[in-house]
Every structure is written in structure tokens, then in C-alpha cells.
Length: 328
Image (tube, rainbow, N blue to C red; front, top):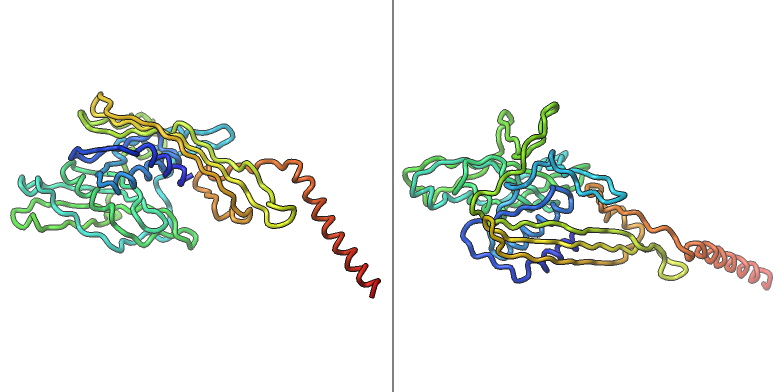
């Protein structure tokens, strides 16, 4: 499904141009597993094209979002905690330079970022958890995109994880142009509740979706169609290893909007199909995503004939063995 999302994003963004100086805000639908994958692909594609992006700011709180469930699928809310047995460790990443505007005006500020990391320890997404605002927020968000971590571990294996870094920008009278601010994990006694975090037990879920700043440019995306299934399972010949045919499809709609004006919109659909060894499914299916483990199609007539053919081949070999013994 990730390859299908990547293909749909590439088609939808083909010819997309963004030339404004401010970071482009990304807004998806409900924070389901599919939206999360698509958002990561959009961020990767735009970042590779040199476009600064901001994510998380306009995301609907997970506690208020109903997962986009399909018939026969269990609805599941996105878990932003990414629990691990061994936390990730920062390996490399330069300090954040003071923004020019902050230097000129002698500003101070503070930004706390939640970095969503993949299994390789790269930053897949950035969520602004606390911030005093611009220009520090954009500077910190842009800088951490290239950070590298030793990935977190769960059950002895590398797993997606989350790291929280706080950047404090004190007001400086001298040396502001060359100063760098290094992010540090918040101390255990400090609360860093994420924007849109789930309400505590007994608290009503009344928080609305964050509003778009007036005049801001926002790229909105929506997964309008998605499916993943196993159409067939069987052997290429009457005997041999069993293989599973996989099929995935996604339709993606995007719209670029500045204020109430729609500047650009596009839709794209992408699909992929392949065959994998039946025994490899346990490595390819992900328990984290509900759509990544579809039901295997029921067997057809070939499934009824296959055992008979195998039994006939084995019986023939046995008869041939005894025939050779009798001839000797």
C-alpha cells in the first residue's frame, strides 16, 4: 500500500509548483493509517523538491476522528504514541540557526517538536506540540527534517518510534547570527501534551478541528478510494511453492487553497499487483495497519484438483519404486 500511495502522490503532484516563501501547510482528513502514509509521501515528495512544509498543525485530534472503516474492516484510530521498549537515540543533527528576523528584533521563543521516526531512524513526520510561534517554529521544523536517530526497538527489532525535542531560543544581544540552538528532550517533570491529544477519562471531546490561519496557503488531500486484497492463491504449476497474488489501489484528491481561493486541484489513481511466496506473508503483513492483512480469496476448482494431482504423483512414484524392485 505504501508503494501505491507513493505512485498516487507522484502522479497527483506532477507539475505542481509552489513558489511562496512561507512553509506550505498540509491538511489531511481523519488521522487514519492510510492518511498517515499518504501524508508522509507528500512531505517526502515536496521536501525533495525544496518545498518547506508544516504538518500536524491542522490535524484533527485523534480522539475526535472516526477511522475510515471499510466493510469487513475494523475501524481503528491512529496511535501517535509509538510505544517502544528501547527509545530512539539522536545520532546526528545540526543545531537550529536563529532566524534573521529574530536576530534583528531581539526575539526569544520556544518550540517543542514531536518527531515521528521510521524503522531506519529517519524523520518521517514532524508534529508541532508546543510553540511560541514564528519565526522559530519554521526554523526548527525545517532543521529537524535531516536528523538521524538510532531507531527505537520493540520486541528486539527496530520499530517506528517518536522522539520529542525542545528548542529554547533566548534573546541574544551579540553573536545571534552564528548561534545555534540544540534540541533537548523535555525533563520528566514537564508536561508536553501534544496538540489535539486525547482528553482524559471523563472529559468531553469538544475540541474542534484547528482553524486555518487567515490567508494561509494549505494543501489539502483526501484518500477517496482505497483497497488491498489477495485475489488468488495457488501454485504456478501443479506442484511447487504456493504463491499469493496481491492487488492494491488508491485514488487521491488534492487541492491547493489560499484563504477561500482554490489555486490548484488534481486527482490521481494508482494501482499495483504482484505475487509473493505464501510463506512470506507473515513478514509482509503489518499488524499496525488494519488494511495490510486482507482475507485470502477462497479456493476455486484448482484447489480441489491440486490435492488429487499431488496424491497421484506420489502414488505413481511408489508404484514405480515397487515395479523396479520386482524387476530386479
